[in-house]
Image (cartoon, rainbow, N blue to C red; front, side):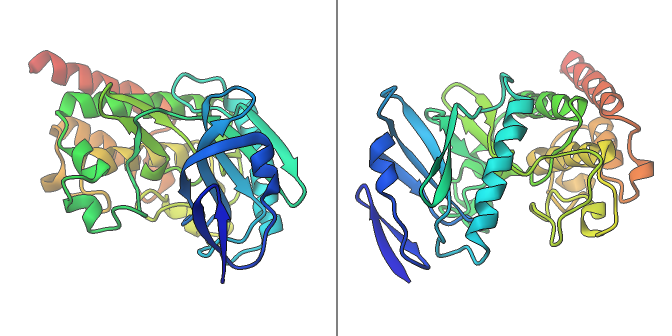
Length: 295
């Protein structure tokens, strides 16, 4: 294992890597994310040209927790640029603002979402701390009033509806893609790199968290389409209002009407789910409106 210094941060790599490109474009790194299994290293730093705080994602090195092919990681990040190009601008999505090749890798640059926290910070609050530690962003989010969590869910649903309308499947979407600012109650979506145009077949093993994966994503010959997106929306509802994989009503924070809609969305058989995202959203928003009127 190699210990590499990047702007004062020590990063453990499987092999030597040239980061001289970093100082040509960025300065003053203030945080680093080096525990992902995707092969990417990410930094919070200052963009020299704009003097703005940015989030930089880099593929090409071999971080300690990555046991794959760095060239495949580079190819995936390159492909992600097209995904973002197709899906941005969107008010709830953190966009790619720049991308470029380096001598041994590829870099994508995003705006820094100030004062935001990831709802699945596995490097800081690995389970069970994620669910029990009062400092955990997920724990704190679950303590918010139901109305605020429903509003946050609607932001997620709005983006996923647009993703579906543009012909993409939300591969690898989970609470690690959700950033929340507790000061302003603003939610943004990040890390949509693995979204794919539909119809598509699942990668094996599938990308994503088991807590959010549709059953068909574990079937190599399955076709992923609109109903996979519907499942993902239902899984988001159980992730932010319920017991995640425990989909019993006793773990559900909202009313029975919303519970039944979410439960239908995560039916194991895709044919038993809602026919389309718009059908799911129409039922969901009607039930939310009724809840608001009765409160």
